[in-house]
Image (cartoon, rainbow, N blue to C red; front, side, top):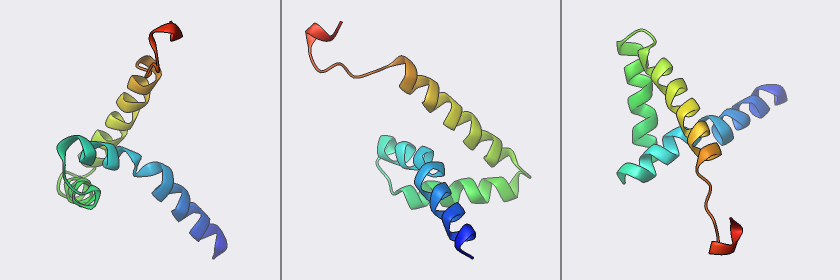
Length: 75
């Protein structure tokens, strides 16, 4: 049972990062975004999950390309 909780914690910590970032961008709760993805996945037979994976990939690429610089001398 401990393995299940560790797996659940891992997905909550890392997997929902996409939902949190989208929610911050839009200005709504992350819970609403998660529920929307869940309903979209059931309604369209997997399209919501595919969209979630695409957005996770896109956010990861964006983080790699755009980095915040603290000052002008960090060039």
